Length: 183
Length: 183
DNA sequence: TGAAATTCAATCGCGCACGACTTAATCGCA
DNA sequence: TGCGATTAAGTCGTGCGCGATTGAATTTCA
Picture (spheres, rainbow over the protein chains, first blue to last red):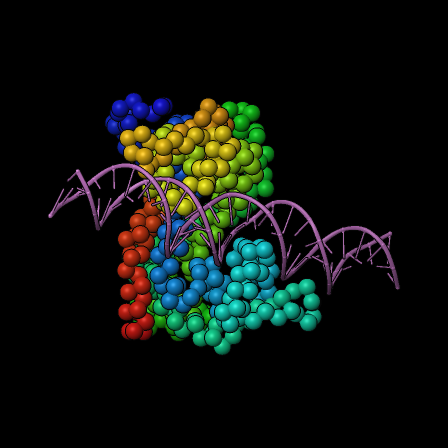
């Protein structure tokens, strides 16, 4: 084993935070606890699990709930429109929306002006669910004990991060090759 | 743009930001853009997509990569140990680890002292991959353009959020009922 | 105008995530 | 000691997420 030297902390003189942040070693870099991506991944699962007991009462899964939220905000979106709003492809949305249709929460209708597109409309039942769902964000907000300011700040951070990742993604394979060649 | 009414705020003593944060209307609450959970969800997908071109070169999926990271940090963990580290159940990990075994990156060995448990050990090939993977965090870090301090702060925020959600999850269904009854 | 290129939704296959359940080993305790 | 309870891993079914591909409608432009 590489890090089983008994004493984990090498130099407790300076604040550990500063040291780790500036002089991260190869070992430190490959520790799960230092992975921002893992924190995001875990928080995402935690949200899904926290929502579950509530969404069970509505008969929705978490992604289905997000689609409903998008439709409550703007009814009659196309599959592609929902996709770009939610960051999902038609191969994910088509079956998901079909399940919503089977539950009679939405109807799917091919556009007359452009028959390639499919428009998703809320049914009465689907619109009605909105009132019930209105309490969920407050409920979750109370559960996390976060202030709205903190929540907004985290959102801003996360959205900036997502933007940076989306911008970088196309050239990351190349960057990785270069990094490896140098290192 | 429904929040541009100007006359929404009952108590105009505080700055608009704080008011919006504290007195979000039902409409505002159900907008996707105000959902912290959606920001986490999207950032998670963005990470998966950003990692993909890099992980393709290693022949790993993103969850497989996280398992490998956990093993590089501490080899020989049991399925249950990996599960509690990664927040996953055996029904997710068992087939995942079997795929890693099929790639000859790990071996699975039933413990002799407790035959209910299975220990997962890195193979030569699996250990060797660590060197190649060492460059990935730096690569991603550079791609996001974040400072280590920012990353650590977000991690701290996210980990706190995850903790709060895990604590709250068991009683959320009840809280939701109460909220609905009152609202 | 008509053929090539593009766009949109849909289908298929694979891997992850998890609830419900099974099987086998270990533990607790009368 | 032996039997019920607990624990660990695994199996199965369902839904999400996406790469690859298809088919049909639309757009482009020679």
